[in-house]
Length: 264
Image (tube, rainbow, N blue to C red; front, side, top):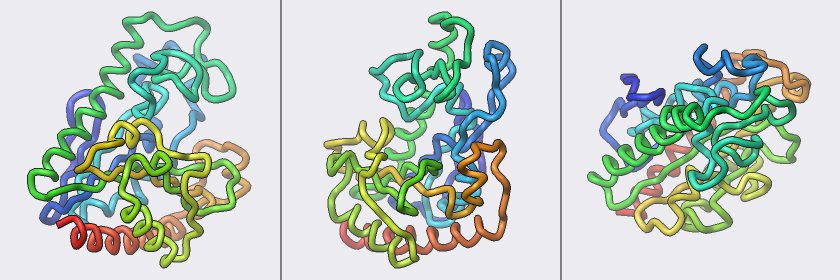
């Protein structure tokens, strides 16, 4: 079942009895509603974690709640620090003034417009994560939060696990996740370029939540030349997506079984 929560967040409830896993997909949408797009110099070909919804949609079948952004990260980016700049450069601001290369606006957005976007796509997203985590903790002593992304930069890895350099999850959790992904044939590294954004970092020191950012190389399911070209939309290869999906599903199931055994 898919329910649209208030203010642009999609909640996907477990399709089997709940298990201690919350899956976050913050950058999978390319939707920029006209009310926001009208102010942009360009609202097409914006970056997106392409096909993450399709790849990670299995999580509900494992007993997980999925929290997914219904709007583009260029409306407001849920993975940016709430205490950071509200409007400014793409790498740090909640509402990006550039697409990472070029300006998106002729002038700075009014504070009221920025605040509305943050309410719709940042605050609402974290409220949904908190509610999902609380629901899972009501039935288990601790829970795993996986923040799911994809990347296009050239790295010699298929998967990057970010745990804030050891601050957002127990070491045994990250070790189990790495081992399970390696068993499925993925080349895995930790905290290389992607150490974990705000979604996982705000759980640092939280004893009941193990939060890990999971970055999947787009080249695992999209032609490398297309990734490098920044084409939008990226070509859809259903067979490669399905193959990667099943390997990740197997790894996550193995981790979840191990997690329940240790955490209980």
